[in-house]
Amino acid sequence: MDGGLYLIAYCHLRKDVQMFAVERIKSLTPTDHPYQMPLHFDIDAYVEDALVVMRGKRITIELKFDKATAAWAKDHIWHPSQQTTKLKNGQLLMTLQVADTRELLGWILSFGSGVQVLKPEHLQHAVRKEAKKLLAGSQEGKRQFASEVLQPGNKRAIVGNVDHQPNLDEWEQGFKRRKAR
Image (tube, rainbow, N blue to C red):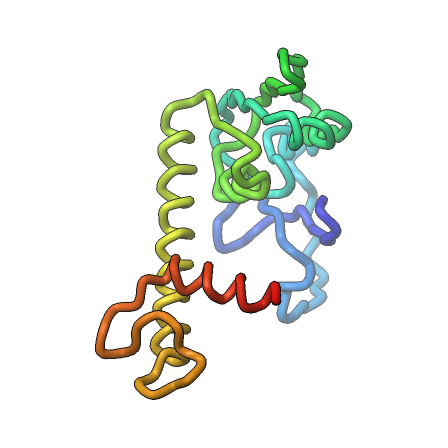
């Protein structure tokens, strides 16, 4: 399960069977109290919807990978429910039935611009929203860097200074040109 060690056990707090990441367990207290998993507990059914670890409501997702991403995505079995169809121009269509979790969102985003969510619509919106937040964070990081580097009188400052909002795209292009020299 993605390189981690997990314990599936009864949780007294939630009064249900839960999955625990072993590295997050802070302490253990051995007791003489016996516990038996519920008789009809099926570990395979318990984890079947998880893409990696997280569990949630099962949804059917449909993804389209561009040619470059499809070249390596097609050779990996991401989930037992995975079905793939090769499309023209080397693209790949992938359908999975997995848990609707933040883990799924992160997995999709890990493919960057090489993947497009076709279904379901709510997942399309979630990916778009998260990508916008990533971009906004990136832009904020550029602004913070620019405010530190582009001080008045700084000879390295090529575009603008703190008195003016620098054009960060121009600044990046100028930086890349200088670095290439």
